[in-house]
Amino acid sequence: MASKRQSQVASTVKRNFSVVLQQEGTYVYGVEPLVTVTNVVMTPDMGEAKIYLSVYNVEDKQTVILQMEDNLTRLRQLLAQRIRKHVRRIPYISVYLDDTLDEMYRLNDLFDRMKDDKKEQ
View 1 (cartoon, rainbow, N blue to C red):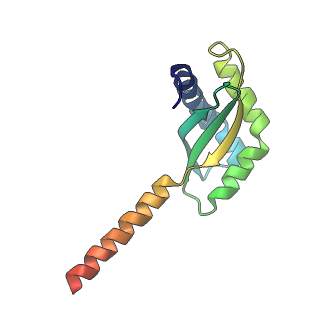
View 2: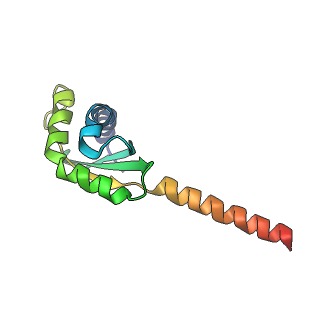
View 3: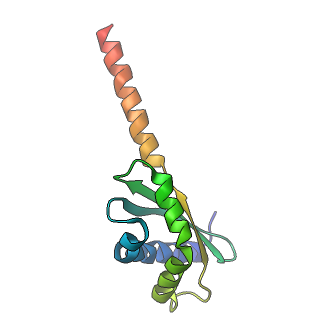
């Protein structure tokens, strides 16, 4: 369970990294994909922020994540400019693909098909 301070820093990172993606995301991964920050998990020492992202409007979502990993130092610098007055140390960031929404849609579709099959019988 995260401490109160971890939760506070995580929400600060989440809010500000979302703004960074809105302003600079098109330079990193292009115009087409829509990328949103779904969750941020801070390590206990506040040294690393694990940022979970949802990617829409593109088939190959892992490519977007790889493009962001290639530009991680630039994204960290932009994040640092926004949060430097709120934290003592700027955390290193790592990005991960959050596919829970895709999984939810897949399961809903599966359940709908099961209902339709049951009605047909």
